[in-house]
Length: 192
Image (tube, rainbow, N blue to C red; front, side, top):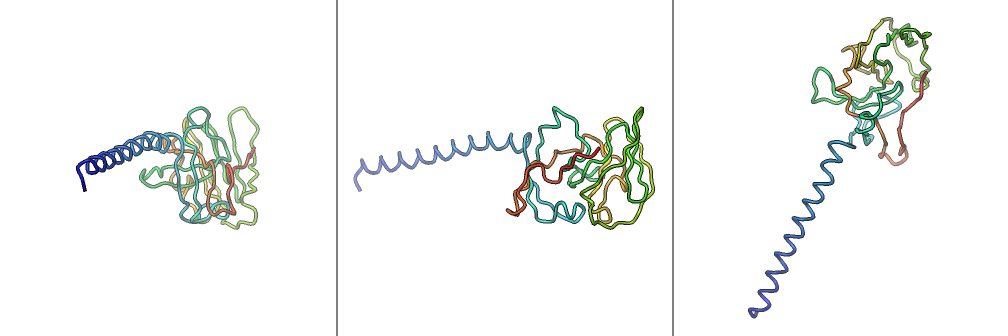
């Protein structure tokens, strides 16, 4: 091999390495902020949201919209478990700040100051069986009452109390896997 060929080969190799490093840095500058501030992937584990969400489903979470609007009743969210913030749960928002959530058997009644009580329509519970419960929970500012759709298999606000708003990571934006279940805002229901 002559000297000119050796110089060209070294130049091509260093150019390739520099291109790979530049591409990696640009990708990190784009991906990391999106992952931390806008959207995040999660995989469902457990039965607390059956049949709406089942183990193994791959979800993308919208982390930005709650910076501009308040969480709403019926939203399905990913949250940090208040007793161990390294653990994440998927739950449905049932009660909003300032409301009183009353469980009467299988019915959920929402009471708020200066309004008529609301009996929640819960179509996501169709066909579900669970033990009747009787309890009342009053929420303070910045507190939400969350429950799993599979009430007998869910550790939720009935067990550990109201969820502080700071523990809400985001709402479920899209279900990507399995392919037959692909949908936008899966599980969302506009309840009164």
